Image (cartoon, rainbow over the protein chains, first blue to last red):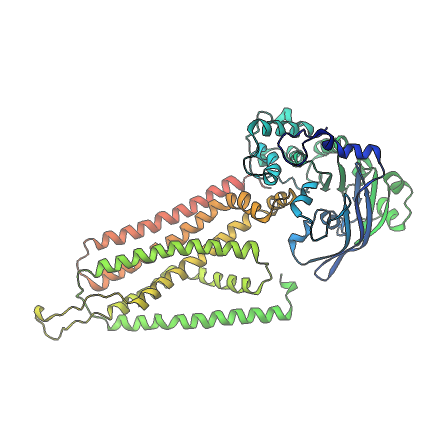
Amino acid sequence: MAINSPHGLGNPTPTKLESPKMNLKTTSMNHSIEAEKLNLWYGDFQALIDVSVKIPDGQITSLIGPSGCGKTTLLRCFNRVNERYGNVTTEGKIEILGKNIYDPDVSLPELRKAVGMVFQRPNPLPISVYENILFGLRIHSPMRSLTRTESDQIVEEALTSVFLWEDLKDRLKVRATSLQLEQQQKLCIARLLPLKPKIILMDEPCSALDAKGTLAVEELMGILAGTYTFLVVTHNMAQARRVSKECIFMFLGELIEHRETQALFETPEHEKTADYVQMRYG
Amino acid sequence: MNSMSTRAERRQEFVLHSTSFIIFGIAIIPILNALKKTEATHIQVVSPNALSILLNDLYIVLSVGLLAILLGIVCAFYLEEWLPKTNWGRRWIESHVAILTGIPSVLYGILAISIFLSYAGTLKVIDDVPSAQNTEVIPFQRHTTLFLGEVLIFILMVMPVTIKTTQEALRSVVTPVREAAYALGASQWQVLMRHVVPIAFIRILAGGCRAMARAFATAALLIGTYIWHYTTETDGMSNRFLLFLGAALVLSVCSSTLVEIYNSIYNSNSA
């Protein structure tokens, strides 16, 4: 169970809260992201070429490939953060939870509320731990609609689900940027949870962490998968094998292979995949 | 950036720089004019209310300077947050801002003095008759066009500094912070008001202080020149001179202290 929310925002009824989980149980082959013929250009440079992909609901999918092959670009398409850089042209269709996110009537705040993102370097906002967790809710709800007890509860639940509550319960007023990197990264995951996202995108979430931090974040992902759909970009193939159920291999902007992780690593169908996963290069 | 510059961009740069040179060519004329007038001036007698007029003018000008700072901050927000980097207007303004901030305030002071000396041109002294009774002083009168010129100089001195420091302050709010907020679904306005402004506020304030210090220093320079040129009695005048100079000093110290505070808060943890 993720966050029980009495804050009057969205769908506070328990049945609706359970919905991602229940969807998963009843229709396990549902796809939460479906991209079709996705092309993307940065100016004249084509970064994604005809990418079509279906990301299954409620499990961890990893994206691997050499640097500059468009993994991060693809990831960023799914909550449209790419568009902030200007000079970006996108073509094609991405359906998230049955809705084309490039439709003109899509509201970006709502989309980004449903599709959370964790970045490569932990990027907590330079405010207190407490306010970091509440930031998402505060921007999506009218001013002063959260009472003190509600927000306390939300913070406690969010921190508990990422196993930070014990460490941080006495330090909630501490500036979030002063925490250890591992704690910061967990906090970045925790602050998504009060918004009850359906999908969590992760862009090399462990590359700035040490071995212990990596392990902790991976364990956390394992526990949260099922409630949320994870899409993880990683350079670390061992990590892809450890955490993900399905794996996508990309090369120079094209999607080469998308299969079950084990199959992809052990019996790659494509020559380029084989070269990469057997570490002949990259 | 250079590797990406095309022929068209280089042509644009050329146009930008040549317009800047032309503008500054034009700006030199009043300075030369001022120097010529300085030679010709030998008036020592001024009506007693000349000082109060000068001070009044300076107070008005300094308040205009304060408004110019606010305008500069708004302008910087617009340039930095809404206009794309490739926008022609933005690049034009930024290159001019860079040139104008590079000019030391003393040079603006000389420009301002040239205008004050033109004021002095309205003073006519009949000094061919040595008797004091025959000395006729036409009161120091406010000359609207010249006053506007003075205001313009102060704006020109204060605004570019404000725009530049504010832009730097906004840029100092690192991309990860913005990305984090955007990725949680914040709108541009929310990101600005809740994160960028609170973080950058100290540095924007520092920039404002710096701009105001410039204005005060120039004002002090004007009073100094006034003392040197027109009166032998320096009572009260030197007080004002020191007051303005002191204000300039305090403001510039404030500005650097604020930057230090900013660095100690936000740069200590970033790797």
